Image (cartoon, rainbow, N blue to C red; front, side):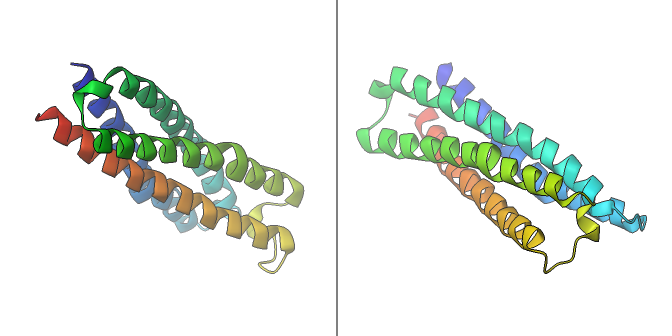
Length: 162
């Protein structure tokens, strides 16, 4: 029963993360930009930042919970499977924590320092360049977390059948 609950919890987070990356973020920017608003990217960015915060904090909390519960189930799976699951869950915890408490925090600070909506900041402005680089790191961090989540989910699913 605990194995199924662990599997469902990770599957729910992974589904939410995939939905965020594939639907929510592109839709927020696409819809708001389609209205021709002068600060469409600023508004969309605010929506995406808040939503990504939920995904990251949930991923961190779920990964920690799954790490603890994996310790309780360690006799139920092979050492190699357990080690890989631990590494994957650790990667999720690390990348979501870094994504939320370092990358996103720095991006928010940069946006506040810009004083104007990001749409009105020159692309060559050092703050905008750093913001764009951090955005790339944020995308990569979530992508790594999702890959680790998928691998852990496959391992958990395999162990459900045994």
